[in-house]
Image (cartoon, rainbow, N blue to C red; front, side):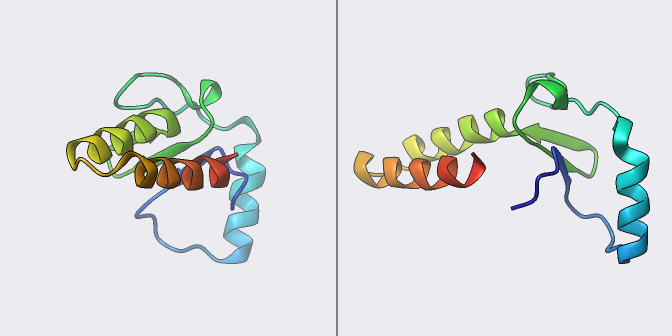
Length: 90
């Protein structure tokens, strides 16, 4: 899994040279805010940046938990999914 704090979705693929240049330019990376809770990427584990919207890992987890509870998934199965998710994030 990538160690980047902000992950962009829907961005065009870049060459290796373009990626290296961007990483060097991003040493003082711009602050990105979650569209849901308003926290900056400096205060969250990860931030997913989409076209016109961003979501932090914590808000994404709340959304996943809500969807699991709405679907009335058995709690053991829901816990297994949550454990798998948090195991990969950390």
